Image (cartoon, rainbow, N blue to C red; front, side):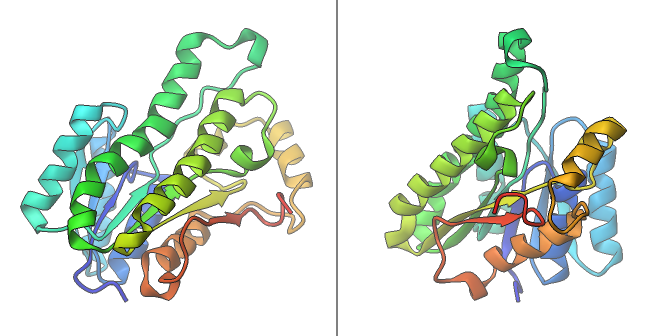
Length: 246
């Protein structure tokens, strides 16, 4: 399905990013596994991909750093000659009530979740435009659609990703580049494992399907958007949330 395609997945050392990287590699893509500080975890992702017969390597970069993102994209092009699939998955949370939230916590979340997505698209687009092809998949969230108490920074960043996705889709469509987003709901990852049992129970009560998603279920949708099966889709946000946002 993705034979000989070149993919870059940001924040791919764990959770949804790792699952997406493994899924793309499983279907033939050569995957660059981006990470910020978790080198060992990123190497684990690569090892799992290789063990399953895939191809991958790690690539360290802080997506919040504009210049560093430019160097990362240039490195992919230098090594592989092209970039076919960009998955913007890197993200953090710094939860807290709005009236108590520090400016630093707000800015850190925006810098990685929203600006980081802008940075990679900004630098990758020059190459994709020359290719006249490419798939960009941005990870947003149900929180960016509905909002979430205690997550004003995260919700704002993910809502921003939706706007960025739609604008980029309009700008790049004439050159055959599709830009879409995936909006997961409650997913069992390291990021959600720190939530209290009370918060988890409250979230589950809002899900019509009555359970959390696995990272692999989100990765399946990423695969669809990365493949030619979604060739006539752009500017779309696919909610994978068990019905939370309907």
